[in-house]
Image: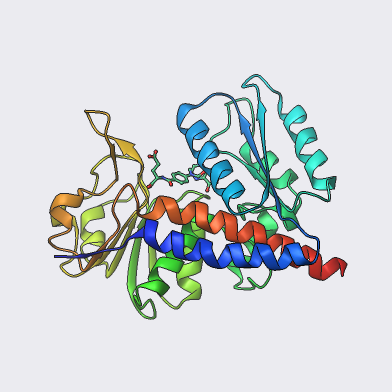
Length: 287
Ligand SMILES: Nc1nc2c(c(=O)[nH]1)N[C@@H](CN(C=O)c1ccc(C(=O)N[C@@H](CCC(=O)O)C(=O)O)cc1)CN2
């Protein structure tokens, strides 16, 4: 039976450390400022943004949620981002994804000042990650949160075979770069990958970010593998479930993340920590 990686408990522990850093910054008159831009009325995004706002306030951050209509043009949205690029009380800018179809995600993420890009999606920050120059560089929160889980649970990466299912900019690609930088042997797979199960069955660590409920079954997993579930799906009864069939896979894996209370809380915790880091880095530059 696998050890369940408790993302919620780990997140609470890390939040404590971040809260201490917020207090230290306050002694220097700095309150880390985070703006979350929410475009449109996607229900899941509204929930995630509300959770982020709650956590930010609990941490003592200066938190703004900027809600914009689904009909906004790309140029108007970029103008809003520029407003926050110039606002010295804001250290971190996050545009909640997905965006409405008329807006090009790349244009929007590129409009964010790389020094305020708390999501790490700006090409400058992604590029630094790729060349393993990550000092003072924000990194995509979900993959970074997963790396923190590996460290906390003493899961070795050096020389391990890792299979990532999913090639998104939010998870798959930065996850692969982080793992390569940690000397793992990484295979990224996606919807066009042939014979996927052959690959997943060879993985020491399997990271699943595909967006399909219970996509991975016990027979897809190597006995003793570490299984990380990034999915946030609904089953036929509307219950929140992951991309991994937890009930059967937990008997085969050595470690497994649940959904909820696995990777999700670590994403928000990493967002808080990175907001504080951006404020610290900006304070060092200005002081
Ligand atoms: N700009 C970004 N947009 C999106 C990101 C992102 O990292 N940056 N990631 C996802 C959504 N996401 C954060 O925005 C996110 C999703 C879920 C959770 C979470 O804590 N989930 C809970 C369950 C919540 C529930 O009950 O619905 C859990 O797993 O326990 C955190 C963050 C897409 N957009």
